[in-house]
Length: 217
Image 1 (cartoon, rainbow, N blue to C red):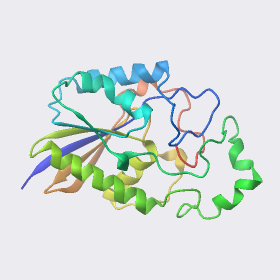
Image 2: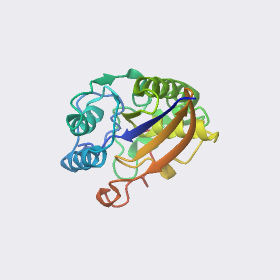
Image 3: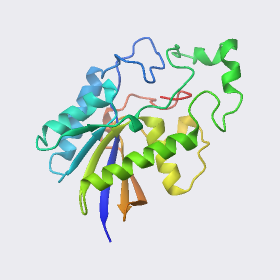
């Protein structure tokens, strides 16, 4: 029987003064607070016996991984498109105060079915690609090994619910996937068998973070 642990970290705070839903758009890196979060996470994982690193190719994810990877120079970072943020029809639109994008009549059609959801990538597709990526990370980590993965809020949360056997439909304001949080998956014989959750930088989280409704972040 083989065992591996895959720590999946959400990226840190992004510099986004205009309140865009940036999704998969290029050019969105970490804010100063986000870099502080990433540095704190590097301290957290400094003494961890990591055996594999894997990361979403988006800038904010790569910048979050960088300080931790610097503490483990013997490991190469595998870039994995399956760890990308979810596809979203609202990408590039301004949310800001009051979630203005949701009040645009041109976008009402995309909100017709929150069960899929109709505004973007189906939850089942997100779960499938994420779990495949995490299984590959567990295999690459090796028996008894530990992988560190950086991804995004919704994909991480959906992967967690898939493993826990919970419905994918949920209230986005109640996702347990805060900035730089760690969702840890235990793999046994290549299958996810347990999930744990930790908020290492809880003291750095902006007040009220996570309470604004978003169709994807």
